[in-house]
Length: 503
Image (cartoon, rainbow, N blue to C red; front, side, top):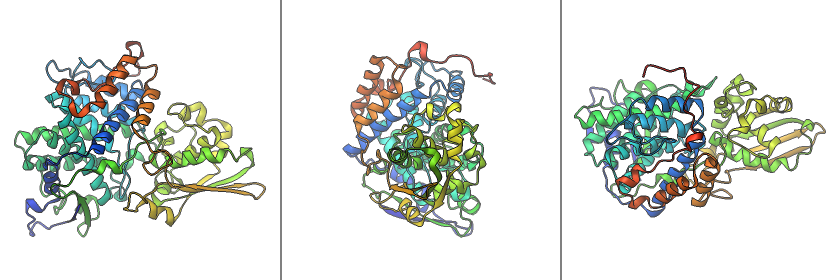
């Protein structure tokens, strides 16, 4: 890996295009380095993972509405498929990416990478796959594009913190998707560079979508980034350019949205000829909750066996990292995180709620654990209010450790009982983490797929999709166009819940 120092350059101080971060990323995207076998395997795993959660969320209102929008733009030739609908029905690729992106993100149940900032790199897949289907690309091209997108998003997340300045993490997603499309389409370096610049420029937004009362826009935001990326690449393929330099400019994102005119970042990127392996540092979710809650859910299951009566608990303190404390803990200062009538999206970002329910139930379910009747249960609310978080430098250090073998997102839990006794335990990594007790392998991804799609799709549809993924490197354009999962006709919501719109 090569480290690239990124800082603000006054307009009077020329920064050549070839020295800009966007150009370095474009060069890397245009480097035709072969993919390692384990990377190909993991990319297939994440395609399965995305499809699992997309089908499970297909009838939720935000996903229904996004699909209804996309269905207003059918495509007779080319086009891309939409999760839930038959593959022979195709739509404009940017709208298919929109609908599929919302479906993938709605349950907050797919892959993650945490470092200086947050990310869900699997959000790159809907946009790149939609363009691949639209333009008739084969499996090898799709894989190359996805490997680039994962690499760029992970490397940006390692080097540039957006959350510190309350900017949403889709600002790293959009250029990653644009670059991945550029790789897949074998565009020249300058076109990819211009596409990255446009993608960065249009995708900066605030983190209010993940603060306070969290609405369905949390699911829409990554899909919006994918749609913006597709449109940016389309414009630049036609010869349009972008603001430059996009990161280092005197009036651009670092100077006015991040650390300011004296800001400086270091972003690692693979050297020429070096394999794109960033996906191997990412991890998926076994439980439908914010990633920083994964290990704590596993730990709650374990600690439940040692608690005989929840009424005997006086307090629960979660000693954890800075980010966990301030984003999903009591350090956030959000009273909504203790509101029994809060939205699912808000409850998903309350470690106090999540730990309480996991401790009481000894299980976690993507629907049941968030149901209003579950959140409003009197004994749950009573225990929930006894939970707090506290930042611990040990866990903050582990959270930011650059070594993926030491990086961890867990916590130490201290349960104090009314009789003065305490129960203390800790877990550094979720069981499903690559360094956890039971790392997810292909069989686990297929099990997750089967669990989330049972009763919603036919057995033949399931077998078809898994078979295509297993043969991903050898798929022709027809095979890529078939990388879709259709619901049983009577299981797909087709009306209701939408007030209609412009389209």
